[in-house]
Amino acid sequence: MQATQHNRDIALHLLLVCSSSALVEQLTAGWQWDGPQPVCVAVPGLAPLRAKLREQPWDAVLHFLNHTACTPAATLKTLRDRNLDTPLIVVAEATDQRAAMKALRGGAHDIVFLDRLNRLPAAVEREVREAGQRADHRAALEMLHDSEARFRALATNLPGLVFNLQRDTQGSYRFLYVSEGCVRLLGIPQHELRGAARRFFDTLLAADRRSLTEALEESARSGNPLLWEGRLKDGERWIDMRSLPHRNDEGTVLWTGIATDISRTKNTEAALRESRAQLAALSFHLEAAKEEEREKIARDIHDELGSILVRLKIEAALLASKLPDHLSGKARSIEKLLDQAMGTASRVARQLRPGILKEFGLAAAIECQADDFAHSTGITCRTQCDEGIELDADTSLALFRIVQEALTNIAKHARASLVVVRMKRENGNIALEIRDNGRGIAERDMEKPKSFGLRGIRERVQSLDGAFHIATAEQGGTLLILKVPDRRSDETAPSEPEEAIQQDLF
Image (cartoon, rainbow, N blue to C red; front, side):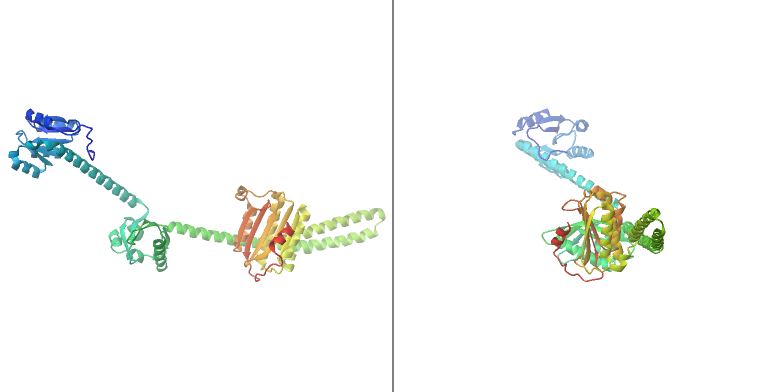
């Protein structure tokens, strides 16, 4: 490719088609400009011309009109046969104007007469510059063509529809460009979409068509990207549109983006949601069965085993009263062991299914569980529950199990000396907070694949349509907060300020 403008510091390379060496000397002697003298090579005919053209590129060809070996037309044909855009300048006698004009009409770029040879450098420089501009223009066109070809190939092979959608100031839409993917995605040829954008909108469900129109209006108004998902009229296929808007000075908005078929993704998401719902239902069923079994075992322990232990204690007491002194001590030891067994049986029954939960409510059950926890672990456990909290049986049982699981985790991992359990009403919800002063919890601990305790708490909260959060407490240790809807009672204000209550507890 030639330079757009010749650098005068570099000598021009000129081919001179002529048979007179005197003419070459005349031209060289008359060449006047502020750059170096051109490198001129004379060729007497077409065969030497072709040979020189094969050797190297030349800046221009000067054809002397009185050269009888070949005509300007023959020289021009030689250049064109080699696909060369090298400027051809005809040098002629002033008396040969008619022949010179014929050569110019035949394709020569310029004419310089011998009596005005001083204008030859400027003519050569101008034609060399214009040849360079033509070369640049051809290169730009080739680059544009290659770019368009790559874009079309990319748009054709993308799994979707590439589009340019325009919205004018009256709110009318028009596709300036759509790729071949419109046939695969919508079953509509390109020319039909370009002719009428409503064909695209007509393929959508009515509700999704309205949502797309609203999304386009919002994107045009705010300049935010267009992110939209909707269904086609068959109701089975989904498309996703993503595009960036561009607004011009006249108010016209142009979206350039892509629409893809996301039906498989949507079907997978629906299958995952259904599978999760089934797993949640199965988990709920298993929990209900487990609670039923726990209640049965707790009833058997309380009724059967408890009554047996009571009778044994009565019999041991009677036996102790009738035995001689050296044996009555043994009987009283048996009574103490029976008292321990009765206490253990009662505690196990309460852990399996606390009767106090059904008889006296969740607050009493939490306080009882805290007492058992403090007694068995030696960790101080304080509770504060708002009065009058009455929940349905499922919610009460779930919250009680969450407290049990949290206290078990604290006993195993926290290394705490103090635990506080707080249950309160908050903005139409029941909020349960459990905090300790232990070593805290790290992010990696919450992400452990076998962290079944926290996972079980999270599943229980989700089954109640609640929210769950666990983090490091301000005073150190761990803070667990969960909120579930209050389905029983209206919100009432706590009797004491929350800060005062927390200071009393911690």
